[in-house]
Image 1 (cartoon, rainbow, N blue to C red):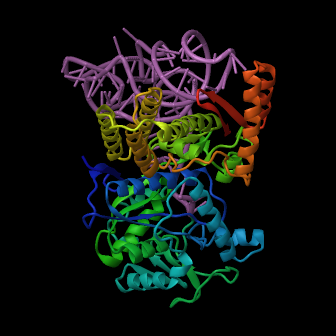
Image 2: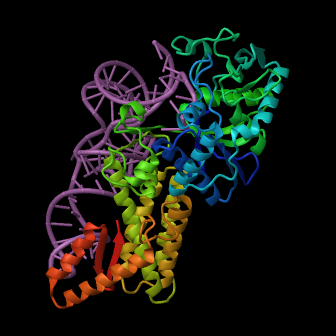
Length: 494
RNA sequence: GGCGGCGUAGCCAAGCGGCCUAAGGCGACGGUUUGCAAAACCGUUAUUCAUGGGUUCGAAUCCCAUCGCCGCCUCCA
């Protein structure tokens, strides 16, 4: 068994075979940094993060490149629309690159909280203007692009395979297209690779064709080729980027190099909120920071970043994912259950009697691993993979309830939780903080709650249940839950 | 107008020709445990997969039709 991935280019499930054995070169379209990240980013980047993690689990030497788009492109080819970063810059009265820096940091903050691994290289578009100009020159030299009115357009009539990724035919597309056709183009479907800048455009650079800025699709082609070579194993992105963005990337790259640009195109599906496309006008546009803080009107509470991650992994990356307060709530409960079991397992680990690792336990563990890998190999079926984690939770709870479970058995179980739930899925953490951040002095809080637990224990011993329950209820109102067990009372913050 | 996808229990969701009288999670209900809780554990919760036809020895899975929903075709993850 080995990894199979659905390749958008061929529309089939294919066995993964990298260009160079043992290595995986992956490029994922990164964000345009003009605002805080939202739920759509969560689905996309968690999905690709799991791909990267699983490739590494399988032993591939992965190079993961994800761009940061810090130059806003025009919204169409007809000189209309606005540059996103320019708009944000005017709104916030800052330089576009200050905007880009600010939201880049915000992006990584959110992705870190979702437990996404940082890409190995995060190139910025503005740092690669020279390379982009070089590619434009190459395209002109090879006859695939032409200058017109200070801009340079890709001549799709020269690239017969244009449309092969998205399955579109150039003439069919024109019928209902909403894009206004620029007079500068030879063919309406030609797209800009270099755009002449108007005077009020803040970000512009000198080029052989005058002052301007790069076309929308150029940066990914250039940066992908610069850091990963002419032939990339995997190029990922949101489904909405399949056309025109990725189609144009292919055209640019393959016209320039004459060889296949990307082996496997992976597209993840979109996010809806309460069954509808997320949009600012619909009032269902939810930022990740709002989810983590519970500060959006659609949400009844704050949700753990990893609960969001779990919700993403609960469905397949190629299925659309609907976020709602109810679905988040369900994911949070499930996440809590896994966390609870792993925490209990690790607690018990320290106290369990030493002995041989039980053979039956090891067999079960190998079954879990087998089922997990089978699911992940099948185009990253995280939904089934996650169900294996829940099987492990049930099994762990069962073992914990038995006196004769050896420490070695529990260690094996902990290892598999860490490997599958942690390293691959990223939902089992190395350490669980008792207090969920928020600048609270953990030691102080632990001490204070400890005092109350002791007082309550005394009340319980004296059968003064009214006092005992009062302590518990009052702590509960503050979000601190007490759990009695034979080993004493534990507490956690919810 | 063109292209693509989806419709599985109260909710999320896997399954994509026989192992399906359909995984897993959430929720609900009953039980064990508990001073009472919480957590945990056990059990129950879809003879059925939008609807109607068809193909097949056999369909949630393939085909056709109908209804409903969603996305892309403009930057967007």
